[in-house]
Length: 157
Image 1 (tube, rainbow, N blue to C red):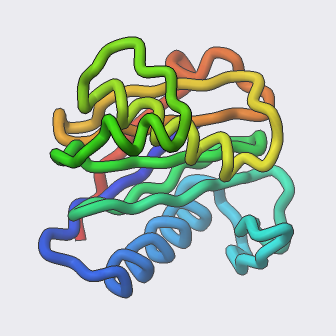
Image 2: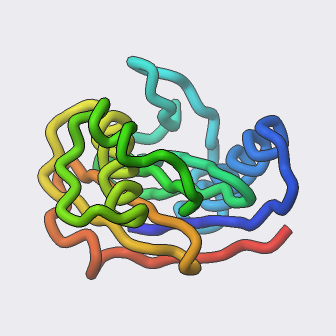
C-alpha cells in the first residue's frame, strides 16, 4: 500500500484535479508498470479500465493532493487541520469524539470519508497525521495491518 502526495501551494480545485491525475498516471506507469492507465468510473468510483490488480483512491485538501494505491479495494481521505466549529459538525454527523479536540474530529471525518469512498464495509482502517498539518484515513476491503504495509512518497513538481 502506497501513498503518493504533492504540495501545491495556493492552488485551486482545477489545479488540484490535474495534479491528482498526474500522480495517478505517474504511479500507474512508473511504479505499478501499467501499460494503459485509462480510468473509468464504475458505481461512482474511479478505477483503472484495464487492470483489476491495482486500486486507488484520491483526495485533496488545501495545498496538498494525495493518492493511495493498493492491490485491494480501498478508500482514502486527507484533510488539513484547520479551525472550525467542529463540535456542531460532529453532533450533526453523530461522531463519537473520544476527545473534544480538533484532531479527534478530523480523524472521525477522514475515516467517515474513507469508508464512504470504499463502498463496502472495511476489514481494516488506519488514521494518522501527515506533516503535522494533515490527517488522513484509509479504509481497506481486505488489509487488516495497513500501518505496516504503508509507504509514503512525496513528489515534487
